[in-house]
Amino acid sequence: MSDKVTMKRSRQRDAIIAFLKTRKDHPTADIVYQEIRNTIPNISLGTVYRNLAQLSERGEILRLPCDGKVDHFDADIRPHYHFICNQCGCVKDIHLPYANMLDQQASEEFDGIITKHSLLFEGLCSDCTQSE
Amino acid sequence: MSDKVTMKRSRQRDAIIAFLKTRKDHPTADIVYQEIRNTIPNISLGTVYRNLAQLSERGEILRLPCDGKVDHFDADIRPHYHFICNQCGCVKDIHLPYANMLDQQASEEFDGIITKHSLLFEGLCSDCTQSE
DNA sequence: ACTAGAAATAGTAATCATTATCATTATTAG
DNA sequence: CTAATAATGATAATGATTACTATTTCTAGT
Image (tube, rainbow over all chains, first blue to last red; front, side, top):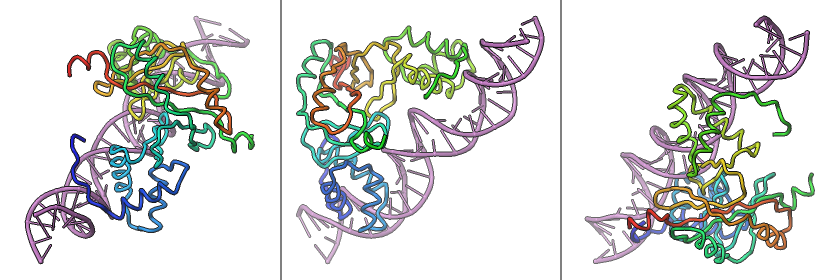
């Protein structure tokens, strides 16, 4: 947290990053675990969680909190927003640029320092609108 | 959820609503529990959770998910946003009106139906900026 | 007021995602 | 090569929240 402890490589972490980069659907820790087990059968779920937490703290990936539901993870660290489907739970990108204006507006209303915001859109994904 | 099952009053629920209305700091379920115990010593934590969930589903109060941290609750159901302090964890109001434009903008970028968004500001509250 | 049916409760167990622990293994700087 | 230490796997622990169940409390309709 405070300072960079030198990071040793591990094939587990390499596999996690590599896998995340192949996916655009923002998998959960458990999905990552299930997938990596195909190549590293005895990887531990704790190892997956530890690495995902570590990588997101270092800013190498994004942790997407989803309003009380399970966290998802994104290897695309460019600032953008996300959508979660209230029916199937899938998470998709919303490519609006990060709205700094929001922080500015909020700062005018607020006695303190606003450094960021998190914004999550909700509704029905295209698949779920059709199967209704 | 689907339809209104007639709601019976209970002094536990009355106390929970009444307490929430006296507070502007958006207490957690546990805070509500601790407080109500002063007047109803044997109230159950499960009862508090059940009622808070029920009331927020009926739209009588707001549940505030806070990015993986503990949920907070708000008796002020007027649409507005919130701020959470990264230091002390307090939750405060941000009185920007609900930005429907955000949903519209997002809808243009998105193949599906966007019904709402949740937006949480983060940073340091006024108390924590001073004690740094 | 009485009563039957339904909702609410207290107490407790269960869930579930996530984190912590710890003995062992793997990585890497020198 | 080797010592120092980060990372792992296996498992236990945590913590917020929900589910269960026998009992109590409401309340609508006689």
